[in-house]
Amino acid sequence: MEAEIIQGLKQVKQASRKLVRLTDGQIADILNQLADLALEKQDFILAENKKDLERMDPENPKYDRLLLNPERLKAITDDLRNVANLPSPLNITLEERTLDNGLDLSRVTVPLGVIGIVYESRPNVTFDVFALTLKSGNACVLKGSRDAKDSNIAIVSLIKEVLAKYELEDVCYLAPAEREALPFILNAVDYIDCAIPRGSQGLIDFVRANAKIPVIETGAGICHTYVDKEADVAKAKAIVTNAKARRVSVCNALDCLVIHQDRLADLPEIMAELGEEHNVEVFADAAAFEKLVGHYPDTLLQPATEESFGTEFLSHKMSIKTVKDVEEALDHVARHTSKHSEAIVSEDNDTVEYYLKNTDAACVYANASTAFSDGAQFGLGAEIGISTQKLHARGPMALRELTSYKWVIRGKGHTRA
View 1 (tube, rainbow, N blue to C red):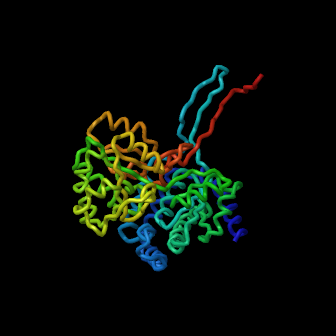
View 2 (cartoon, rainbow, N blue to C red):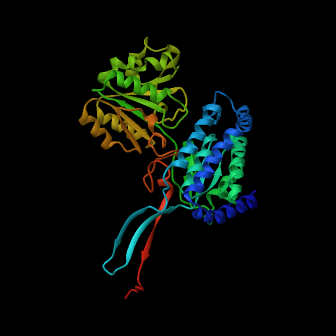
View 3 (cartoon, rainbow, N blue to C red):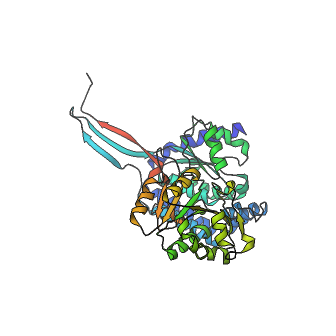
């Protein structure tokens, strides 16, 4: 396995140099051709995806992430075309000036180089990563999980079919799905410029602890929504319901409702649709539990434990924490957040601004659902993931976030004394 992987990494590193020679029009053609081919070979992709699905328990929260169907495939191809039409993030002059000695300086965007993506159970990521890395001039090393092995092999075969027309097959390399392959990716200091893990907190922690190459953290979303004393009940109900139930398996889904003690009387109304229509299991602290008894399905209502907080459920489960004021809300969020997406619902502008300023997360919302934490929703096209760290990039990792820069210095025979 090691020899196979090293050979693949050498080839992708060598091929990455060719990408800077592509025009933006050629990149757009590749992505549009891939979208066409994916729809043409839809039956093939779905048949391979079915093999993966048959190996997974449908009750597993990862099942929904793994699932491809015609609707999702159409959305994926729409994203490919969208990325194709976006402006190139390369060769943008970020600043320029002339020094006192006459040297002309400019700072210009360039690709990161070769990006290694480590991800779980989401074959759509294979399409997204390829589109974004190609558009930003980067080659990609894909390390998917065994759960999506057949889906990923099928998708990469289509990618390479299109790339072959441009003699660029090696700019996308799919590493073996086995876990034993991962250390070779994380230690590839000569071949990969950075690694981006996308998946569970366990995966992210493993990559961070074991990588010798630079790591940009994305993924785990332990998301809270604080319903303030001055919240509008209708807004709170709509936002909480959407953030939790729109799609429970995604990283921007609501995990914990934090509610001001003065609004506990409104809790049954805020939670009504989640219990009646979406069968969301709730782990409520003592005060919230007391208010929900008799107003929420008994089979779905449980007392909260310490483990109920700071958990990314990725399923039809959530917790509720009661607080006495915004300070206690901020303390609770700070203790349990993954710094992904956090929200406040309030009509008091001072409280809103205080919460936004004092919440440390990549995306912070006022009177809106955390479900909007998405590169496409931000107008960035598709995304690699949501960066939860502060170095290099934060929030949706889209095209501009997949570039670095270089200094270009032009002189007229200048020498330094």
